[in-house]
Amino acid sequence: MSDNITPKKRMLAAYRGDKLDRYPIAPEFWYYYPAKLLKVDLITFEREIEFWRALQETFKYFNCEGWGIIGPAYSSLEVKIEERFVKIGDNRYELKRNIIAKNGNLTSRVLFTKENPSWILERPVKKIEDWGAYKLFSMPPIKSGDYSEIERALKEVGEDYLLEVSLGVPFFDYIAGAIEGGPAQAILDIVENEEFYIRLKNEYETWMCEKTEDICKKTSAESLFLGCDFSCNSVEGPRMWRRWDKPLIKRLAEITHKYGKLLHIHFHGKCMETLQDFAEIGVDCICPFERPPGGDVTDLKKVREMIGGKVTMNGNVHTVQTLIYGSEKDVEKEVLEILEAFKGEARLIVGTGDQVGKETPEENIWTMIETVKKYGRY
Image (cartoon, rainbow, N blue to C red):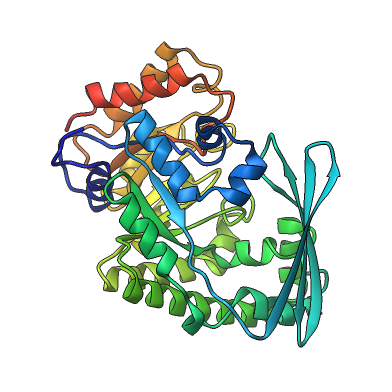
């Protein structure tokens, strides 16, 4: 790579709509490939390896651009947490957590295996009365924030890739991730206890905005990240998303931009019905623009028209059909489709439709990267 144009600079330029030499190429390496390259199982990877450092090694290996996240640390004197990591079978472990608060005790369990990322077995909120204790656990005092590990990671990553500070998730994700029964139960609870969840939403939005402002003031990060598990068209649906999540995202974008920083949104699954909402809000980058069947992106020129040069598209290479099962020619063809659709437009990062799977042939990843380097010049 050029001595003057670093991976981080290319990513930031794309977020801002600036042209340097070529489009960035940023496969989403999350669990599988970094663990594979580091030669560790996924229990070791999740519990012992610094995630940002694993990504750094992976992006260096593939000599490409990329992004990753690191979260802030908070604490609360009002909550005590007890954890036990126990073996429950061959290569199977459970992390059992007790959350002990003045207004109730909560339990949760997470399954770990060596072959796949961890999986939630039991969520802490079983009834509406549990929210009091969960709020103390999940919304600790902002003034307790410790950003020293963020600053250390940002310094060590340097220009190798774009390391972003994770803000957490939108409101629907917050409740769906905590309620036993997940997103389906969250929708039922919202319908049955609407006034309660309006109040909870207001509390969460206030806390998220205060946290975002604190991160902007106290860290040197240039970009912030908002995640997504269920807060998307495929699960929550556009109507609920506009009511329960869009207002918060808009406020976070305004705060982020007030401090001269950028906002990156992860939005799984179908996205076409809300693309213009994101352009209106003014977020800087969205990923991963999945193709069917997981997503609904079938017309890249329409995507370009809808986001109107206001939002950067990151993603779109099919992680299963193309990267796992396709040939190198299939990969090259799909990358060229993306480049052609956005020809002349600066707001593009060629990435993947979610993380690169463990079954992906390495030669297909290299083809994706080299195709952008060869043909992706502005």
